[in-house]
Picture 1 (cartoon, rainbow, N blue to C red):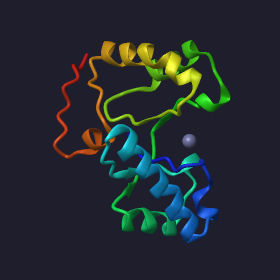
Picture 2: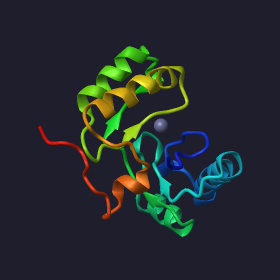
Picture 3: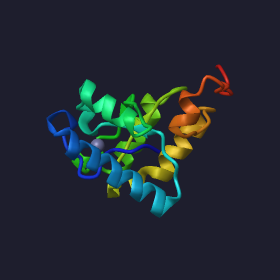
Length: 139
Ligand SMILES: [Zn+2]
C-alpha cells in the first residue's frame, strides 16, 4: 500500500504547492478511510523528478516504483491480469494496480498464483525491509 497521488497527475509537471496537495489529500484519505500510516509514494506513470522526491520526503514519504504493472487502466480481462502476474511475480516483486474492475476481479487469482509459487504476500514496507526473510521454496 502506498500513496499514488490523488488525481494521477504527472508529478514532474506540477508546482510544489499542487504536488504537496496531491500527496496530502491522498495521505488524509488513507489515514481517515483505512487507518493506514503510509510511508511510501509511488508517482503516477512513474513520472517524477528530484523535486517530487524532495517534496514526498518532506512529508515523511519515500518514493518507490513498482516492478510489475497490471496495466489495469487498459481494462484487460481479470484472467489476463492473473496470467501476467503469475508469469512475472518473483520474490521482491512490487505490483502496481489501481482500483479498477480488472484488478478487483483478478485479485483472488493473483493471490492464489503468487501463493502457488511459495511466495508470501506483503506490504511495500515488508517487501523492502532489510529484515525480510525469503521463505519461498527454491525448486
Ligand atoms: Zn497509476
